[in-house]
Length: 208
Ligand code: URA
Image (cartoon, helix red, strand yellow):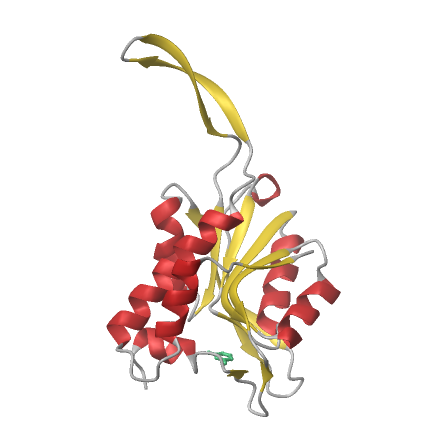
């Protein structure tokens, strides 16, 4: 099952506050990062470990450390920036691959306009971050881009997901697991998630 709705009490509580229209930009921004960190904790539960010998206080001991190449976090601009620091709080050594996706007004297809990916993607876990999984167009285009660059281990963290977006990702990329704080009801005619959070980018950046 590629969609994980994380029903942790701290996430439910914070998301409840974020749904309030009167929440300040500062608080919305802070909670986006906090929920992103909690989703990161869940999405990385099965990361591979390897053992390492270290000098402990009582002599040589075996400890565990994360195996393999460092994770890359992939914020989809602009709103994905609002979750980036939350992920980096738990994975401070992660590399950042920034992606920009815009809708082509003629074809209505999601088109990449920025692709600053880190190297060795075939050996890394990519954690895509975007607060709202609405139609799924940007998410599918980002996964397409990462796979084209060789990435085979991709997970997505979203604050809120619409059933329409989940279906789109499942249909195009059934191997990609999505972690969300809430699966909401539906999209309205303007493409907003109901009940959702409103325009997450505007609420994070204070542009409305
Ligand atoms: N993008 C947003 O910021 N909010 C939505 O509800 C849908 C897409």
